[in-house]
Image (cartoon, rainbow, N blue to C red):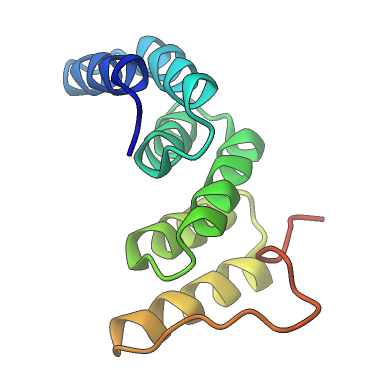
Length: 122
């Protein structure tokens, strides 16, 4: 659970996002994850806001962090797939989409012994 300051920053980000102030939302979400590096919702929201501002490479990093924190979150994998599509990294987008599909069918993402994180962008 995010601490109080991180939650406040996240709420500010949501308010900015709701009014279309994407740059301000990014700033608030960055603050939220600085305050709580394990704040899944903060990482997810930051990634999606960065995608809206065209910062695709950084968005992918946030998406990867979100899937690392919650490897069985359908929304996180779906968002990561969208980020990879925007970056033109179709093979990675298909991998993330496949993981989302597994979750949508009630499966679980199981890390291989040598896999520590989701595949990274080249």
